[in-house]
Length: 209
Length: 218
Image (cartoon, rainbow over all chains, first blue to last red; front, side, top):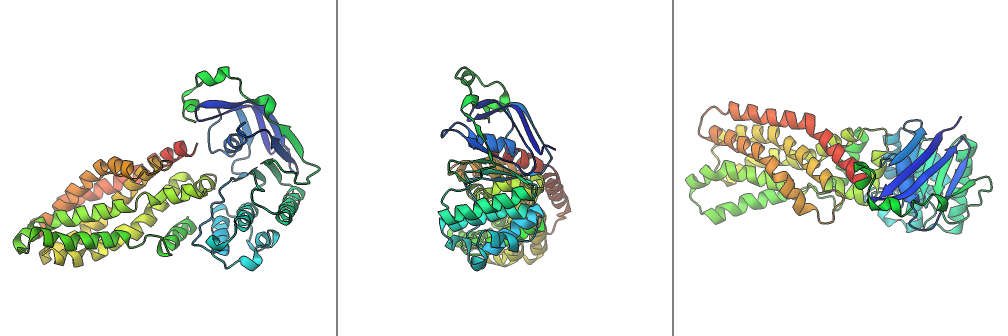
């Protein structure tokens, strides 16, 4: 059974159509990597799939509340400790306990440290640990490996593999090779919206998207 | 929902959270006015209801932009918007947290500041009652303004301009209730109107604020 199906999707950013006619499906246990040059609309596509902005055209079929979104900003509060940050997101999303997530991202020894005292890579790992405690099957990841070192990238790849093995799926925009041989790659370049569609927004929603 | 409320309260009382900012501003206003107006008790007593209400309103305004701006900056707002909790609930909870950290302390401390302004003792219960009934509306309307201006850099000025007109009815009936209480007249009519404004605001504004947030998150 398909967990996420996107058909003929068009997305807009800042009043200009970015991508047009994107179609793909995602099955349980599957990973799909979005590729494309900077500015093509990978972030916009992920935000649209996650439900943060409306699609200009096309449709997104997904189980409600099945998608966990992770962006450049990790949603961490510097004044709270690692445990407090993670516990908060676990309670909001009603997911599994935090201890396995801390262990998976090698954060157990930092559990009582305030988030403002973490390094950029450690913050990123905490942001990714949040995905584990949402308990959601589909991960929509925007550049998940930014500021991670090689060892942390390996940790993250292992976490994704475990997620896929447990029947989850992942949709990610990334430039580096995660070593996920089984992942499919979708090149977005053919879906770049033509210049003509930039002149007049097709709808009110597109003008303000 | 409870965890969001607890998180916001915890953030407010930790370093840099801004708890007590509104209260300090209220204290400054109420201490400076007698110096500016002069020590005549009768004049102070006459203007005290208005000063106390304007002071409380401005103190509330001071911390409004923090309701959503901080969560916007660190990406929490995106994540909250994709959470199982409806955005209307998020808005209501964050407005409640704002009220607990500003409106509630102001209400409790107001009688003390009333003494500084020679407010007659008879008006004290009315002052507390009117603030208790009126300040929740200030927080919810403020959350709406904060939702409208969340993506803007230096949106504080615009926020104040948008929100102040909405605060006027609350200010009028709140100060009127205290004034009538001070003069020994029946103050229940303005108090009931004040409660009515607050009830309508609490019921309707979270939906408007959530809609504004959805547009700003695009």
